[in-house]
Image 1 (cartoon, rainbow, N blue to C red):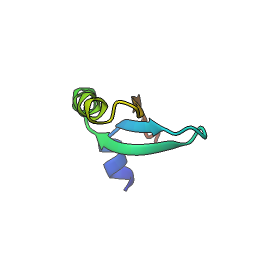
Image 2 (cartoon, one colour; image 1 turned 90 degrees about the vertical axis):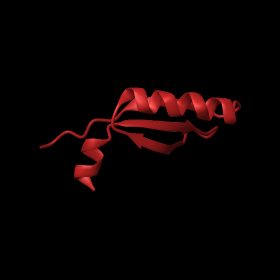
Image 3 (cartoon, rainbow, N blue to C red; image 1 turned 60 degrees about the horizontal axis):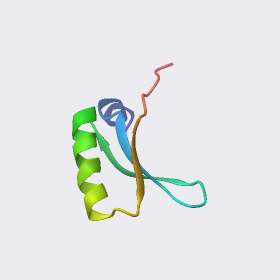
Image 4 (cartoon, one colour; image 1 turned 135 degrees about the vertical axis):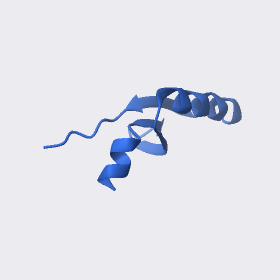
Length: 59
């Protein structure tokens, strides 16, 4: 799981009204995440979606 997360650091999250975040998808590149975000915003314009970079820091 850690290796997979390291390979997909770009995440689309949906913000809920109670300050909760739901992960919609994880992607290898920003351009893939941004493309999916644009499609999702056209399909569900009322949702609050954003792309975030979530790096896994190795100890």
